[in-house]
Image (spheres, rainbow, N blue to C red):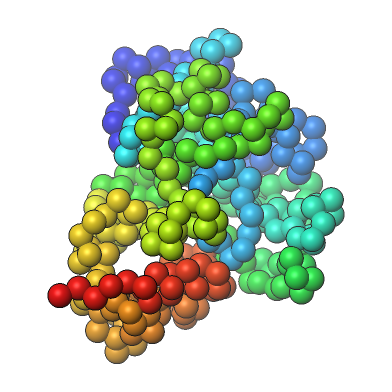
Length: 353
């Protein structure tokens, strides 16, 4: 990710002091509501002025939870300090940027009017010395989220789209675990603020628009080319957006590449699971596992074309066993639909001589 120059950084710091009530990293409030991200009842997540909702093309699987995402940029008076576009890497976000993501379950997925149960709200905030993370765990009464650095476990139940009652032991990661996934070359960074994750339509109050166009037109994004020439990931569960291969690769990027890519925390495995990777061996095809521990279950290769059940990658996606399951953090359920997609991709994968 590109860095802003020192003068711009100092200016942004000055603006944060001038325009914000406090530095949330240096002095984090006990309650989420004290950050002024939302107006009215904080549970309803109505964004305050200067707070923009957004979504990603293909999200990380988090035990079937839904995510409500928001971004707030620092301001120079009434003008936001913009992000700077990058075709491949995380956008250059100014000091003072706040990213918010609330993990929630529907009370009844068949009827949105019955509302949501929020479990946690994770924040990434760019301070003068880099990014920092804060986590707010929602109380049982759903009145507010409360600062929690040590993580948490919550048993949650909801009714899914078929009418079945689902129960899950949901894990809220601690601050150090957040840093493990949000790591690039030893520094904490956001994951989803990339062109390929954001190049999609979003339903705003005044109509549906491409998110990147909307951000540019609201002074939030500099340097955006025509979105028709901007890369975008397929939507993993929408066949209209790509082939089985395209959607499976998007799924692996969203769920695995934040650790399995150059400079990330699991680059020592030699896997690069970004959707742009073209070398089959970097994807794991006929690649022996170098650092899988018990996670091989006597399988030899990460991916065996045409044989998903002989592939370590699928075995680890299916497992719920600690030290075997992938992703290894904040997942205690199996993404049955995602696993089925990856299985089909491996089944259809041609042999390589």
